[in-house]
Image (cartoon, rainbow, N blue to C red; front, top):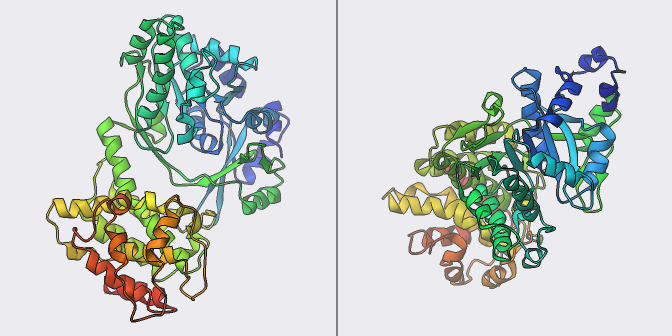
Length: 528
């Protein structure tokens, strides 16, 4: 069973379907021919998240007869992805949805019609130029990670042939301007706050330099600023797409599916002809499109206002997902766990994060209406975190924790203060912050040392708790004052917020000796 057999027609559909593979229901050749002539969507970034989410959404529309053209992928960073993941398999891939039950769902994705290398040294650049000059092009989108929107001063010196992604996009938009100032929506789908503004800032950095140097006319800037011509909507995306999973490879091989080789490129992209991802997914987009768009709302995308997108992001980051992740990572590291899914079977950790979300954070949640916060947390606790296929670890999530605490917990505390809410309702959030001091000490609950995850502030913060020792009951905890008054770390001075003394008391309990982390966690979770 090979993907290329589907393109050649030399395969037995009944065999694939009997083994649970969902095959394309549309005429692949016809869709590719029409898309070549009348392109509507170019996506930058051919990685795993693209194939598992945007491309899969479009694949569903094609299967249901709700759209008639595919998506063209353009790779700006790792050209081996085109050579090794797309071309050998005729641009087909297998999407494997990982269910919390331990089963998988398998769908052949055939919505990608072309895979192009977005660089001037390849003939593909001429094809991209042709696409951007087409009046039928409606949108371009991105999953290139937040780093992909960076602008380097040296790249601005490259004239109309920059090397970085935003410079190449600006060059292609200049082609579209020269073709008649045609409208287009520039849509980020990356997991970063206010992502549309990041694309806009990157594009404008190049465009402004080119106008300044006489490489582009002033009208090019006017074109980019005209919201009826070029739009940069915000979006919120949420879906975990881990590296190819060994168990998934084994399950596919047992079916007789042969396209299951692991691929690591020279740039350390980890991928395969199949892409595995969690089943739960969210994509909320500001509905500002200047030249139409595919009917993605019928595939589950929520189109709404910019204000609502921002509310969804705030709900996720400050209440319903990210704080739970951080709380789990701190205590998971202390208790010696190396898998988030395993933590969810812990009788203390599971109710710990559940009560943080439902009891302590929910009173100040930002309700975006389009997504129910209670249902969102329910998906996190019941379907997402327990998924045995998700190889995520508390150690990975604990990276850069000092940069996360102010948003994930500080914002909730501020809202309690601003709204005059009862601060006594905050118990497990202070416990999480107390656990951070024990985490910084680098001593597991059993008394053995461990290395906290990389963090730019790690050495500085560890120095603050250096005087403390585990199992020394009469020690001076005065050093905590310097830690928990750090507004740059926690978003506010926790002593001024009235929580400093409470947190100090919890730290004393956590440092009381071996087994104190488990005992303290159990005590407060049970009381809550």
